[in-house]
Image (cartoon, rainbow, N blue to C red; front, side):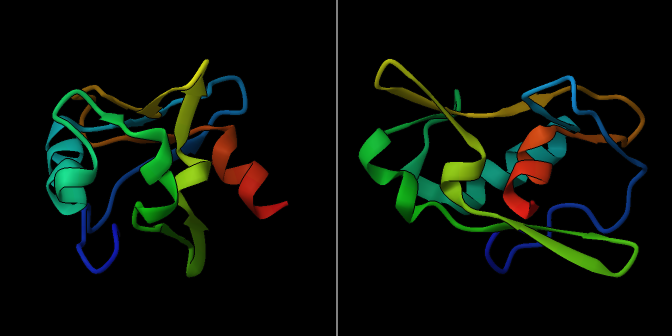
Length: 105
């Protein structure tokens, strides 16, 4: 969920500690971008000063809820900020990166 918007109702999920991106289907990325509105452009760029205003993204995994805040899913590279999502149509699979682990532990 992004804020109150459901992105995916169910999916196969993997946690990959070797990646720094969150891999999601293209349709899910479109829903996320729409839910974020004017805070992010269509390429996933976001003003670094707006990161704290980005909505929380929650994942429910086997009944456990995990939340990522904007600072958890945005790359800041030398003052240029962008979402850490990578859209790949891979049969509805979602790959969660180390961001989820870092935010929970």
